[in-house]
Image (cartoon, rainbow, N blue to C red; front, side, top):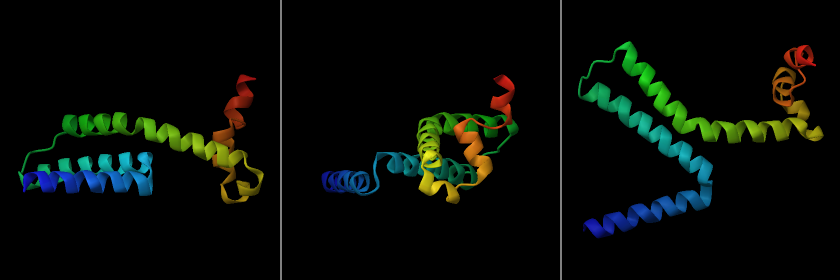
Length: 107
């Protein structure tokens, strides 16, 4: 029975990666782990102090940094695309393309 459950789990993981892509799957797993930590804190009644909250944010920030970097690169490509520029707010375009007021000060 354990082998069947394991095989079914692997099939679900493979199907999710095939359908959604590896980046989306990684986001799903990170969100699942975050939810698991939060439910565990509530269910088992562990106290949450400021240091624990900071540590949780650091750990999940590190886990998500690669995906966030990939997402920002994709948004930068979209901002450069002429036919999609009307869908991206101008402030975000300036930030992604590096032609905002901060970059003009450096020049």
